[in-house]
Image (cartoon, rainbow, N blue to C red; front, side):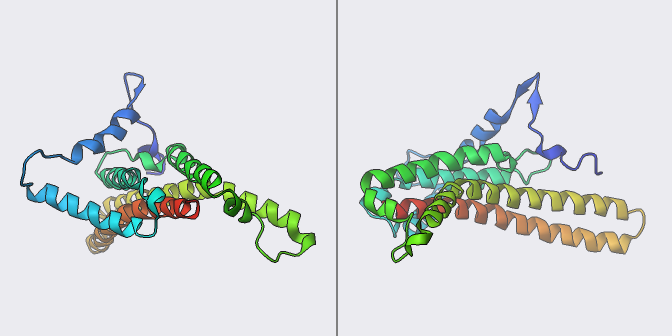
Length: 226
């Protein structure tokens, strides 16, 4: 069991070609669009949820910040659907890869910071030096604030990677323990199976919450720079 513990995190390959691109594009097929005047229940539910999340997330932004609404909604849909699809048996979750999460976090963070320096140059520079700082502490605080600024995308990516990876590992370990206990103690195996079901339900919630947290933090970075 320990030999295959991290097998689900290995990038799938077919005929020597990585399948990450197809896996990343697959969630977009799950969100249907309709040209009808009256939508069905699925599309109506989808639109209602998007409007609810976008209204809550965009309420703190000004006009310039609200231009990012489409991209933020696309981001939360992509991360949420990818996390949920990764809970299916024998599937691959791209958001367990730190490289992919950094590839999402760094451009979004950089775009928000560059927007801040273009539109609010003085306010953006003022973040590096809090008001009322004693003169001897100025160099140290500037260095600390600079490090804290550049660590933001890393924190975004590591948070998403760690939470999704930890959940998958727990499911894998408890599932393996359940199979091993079936031949030893049926009662213990049943208790372990119940824990596995509860953990799986929790992971569905974590998959959606992590998508929301990632997008919300990007939104807050944008709010600070617009």
